[in-house]
Image (tube, rainbow, N blue to C red; front, side, top):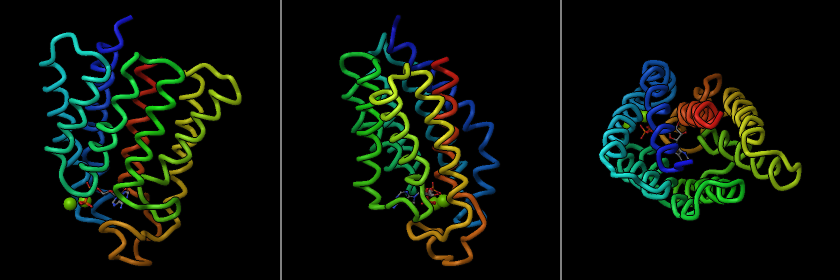
Length: 207
Ligand code: ADP
Ligand code: MG
Ligand code: MG
């Protein structure tokens, strides 16, 4: 199978989902931020699709690298460098193709990049609250429970969904939402929610 083409197809899927959820993500960000998360990501993923479509027979690493640079240059805000920088850091893990091991390394590199850049811990109401359980569940499912990557990804998506729910009753301590203090309580975090949509579409693309 052509893993580069699979990445390009997955990016198109993610972009369609983000376009569909643009208004919802904007609603979430209007409750606790500046109402631009849906528009930011939609602009970024549209550019990403255009740029990966223009590549000639890309490797998975090249395709992911291209998405990362597109997101960094087009999304802006807090989320652009976090999403784009994470993908750029993780892309190299796919240099030998897409396997159980390489996707675990990819997920861990992505999480490390987001944590290094954003300096957020679990419990501060950010995308890290969705990412940490997803990445840990994926790794454990493959390395300890011996699940195949698709089954592991399905478990990771469930963990990610619980991570989004976990952001609802807590107070934001990072990013714009932290300016609201206790008024940020009672709303899902926009970046955690968009992370879940990405994970759901990766699962659908892989299935
Ligand atoms: P901005 O806040 O600059 O308008 P976006 O609305 O696109 O950017 O993205 C907001 C999301 O970014 C938040 O919902 C949160 O998940 C994430 N975020 C903000 N700051 C951080 C951080 N320091 N670490 C991790 N994620 C963060
Ligand atoms: Mg915003
Ligand atoms: Mg903004």
